[in-house]
Length: 320
Image (cartoon, rainbow, N blue to C red; front, side, top):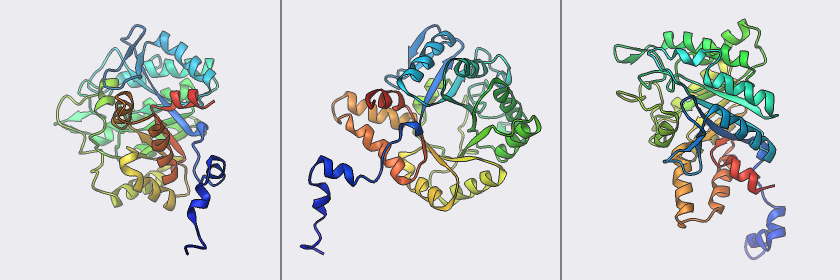
């Protein structure tokens, strides 16, 4: 108690503050999202996400080599195909946009390659599964997820990240992988993915806006925390190697709960809306760039082991 205890002693100067710093941002734990567009020539900035681009397959090869050179350790791939249909069949084409992108990264870099597994970029409805009577048919969608997972594994992916929030998706993918002798392929499950208002810029980036309705029948209600823990329980039982909370900054409580309750690596995804809010505030001069460090620190302080975020490239480049 004061005056014996003086907490300001720990903050006296930069060297002292550094000595007692509790949370560090480990660059090896950051994951950079990359968008590859089969329809694109060169690269094109995403208007709603300053500094983030869609890449043609040729430009993507140059970009991943650059990421590898500056020290980025991990990427997660999102593909925009030429052809979309009612079942998202392009998602499991062995020469599809993500499959080719996996092979390029494998052949040209040392990075860990993660592939997002969903159908929203591949269906003509923009939904994450097969539509019947204006509703996503869960079990028919799982069949396609299994095929997509095998095509990614065949291409050499390190980690598969199912994001569609279908019931049983982790079990179906794990079985498909194991049955095809891909027992070492890691599954990073989007375990508690909320029907958030923060995804708008991503839908521009991935060309995945639903053509009707919304995704609230499969993504989670953002009011529900206990339900999120149940989703994590189920994914762990089904064989997930990593569980995830998405979005990040509005859900730090659930990152903390996940870390407390589960003896598994916990990932989070600082989503497009979170990125755009921070980036635009920095670009406008309302906030300084240190806010990026503060935001990233917050997710690790909450308990995240891995953080997917759009600041990864610049953060690593600026923290050599």
